[in-house]
Image (cartoon, rainbow, N blue to C red; front, side, top):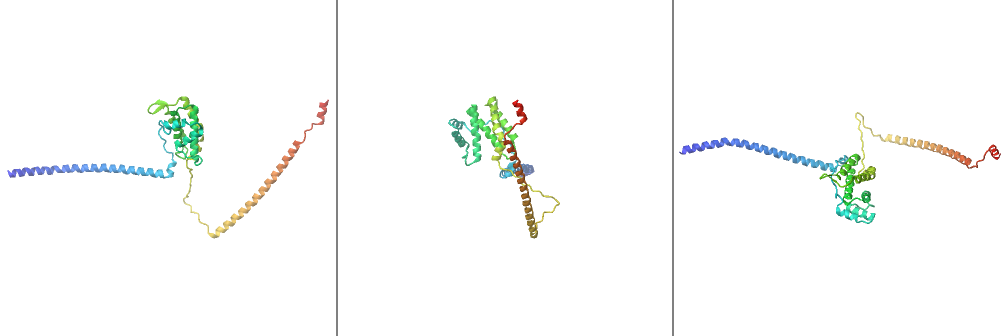
Length: 302
């Protein structure tokens, strides 16, 4: 009995040992799959970190901002910058000066005497508000018109390069988001006549001075060009003995130029004097009274 039990025990043990390698083989597969997943996760993390690092480098690099950035998607911009409370404050203003003060506070602008850019921005939006009042726009329409102008101005000053066509297409696409009823993408906030009036105002006031706004609000771009020619020897520095000869040659050229300029100036003065004499002689002849010939006078008396 003991031998049978031991034999049975050994048989079960052998079966368990034979079955264990298959499980062990399965476990490495699981481990490899887990390693692959962790590797892919690490790869994605490294890529995202490298992407963020590249974006940070691009933000800090001033040359990276020279290329025109992509314009945002056109969306509904009602109450985007000036909400209902801000519009009520502007509506309560009695004159233009009070309206400009309130508008400067709402837009976070400084004193116009201290900053030229703030003064130009304040003039831009104050005249836009005056136009909206003249057209009889509602508070929603006025807020939307100011938001359209603000987004257009941001797209203009995003790059010092020329992007007037892209900005105009962006402006028209955003404008259509407020002229056609197609929720949630667009609403019919403006009528057709109001849209045409707003387009004419923006074209005549902003797009006609597009380069001026870009000149004031964007950094100046300068090109530093250096050329290297292959196969040519670099220029040699002149020794000290040749420097004296160069200075003497410069002095001689300077004296000759001064001499020629003196002769030319003398010739010009003589010609001017002669022309003045001719002009004075003609004026004297014109100032003399006009006398008719004797034959003509006799015929008239007859």
